[in-house]
Length: 53
Image (cartoon, one colour):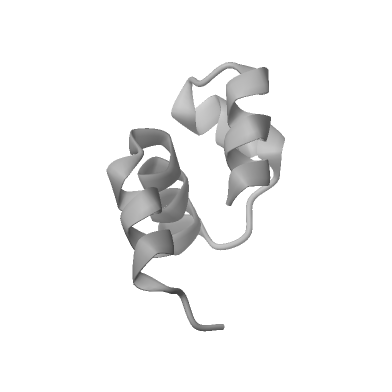
């Protein structure tokens, strides 16, 4: 999968997207429930962010 520069910038420019990418990089595949526990984001915010990724 090739990421476009704009997509990378969008993820790095968004603190929650960056945190999610770091979590997946460190832990491997994670469920949204695990991400909720790690990020402290609200469920709505997390799901909206995941859907936009």
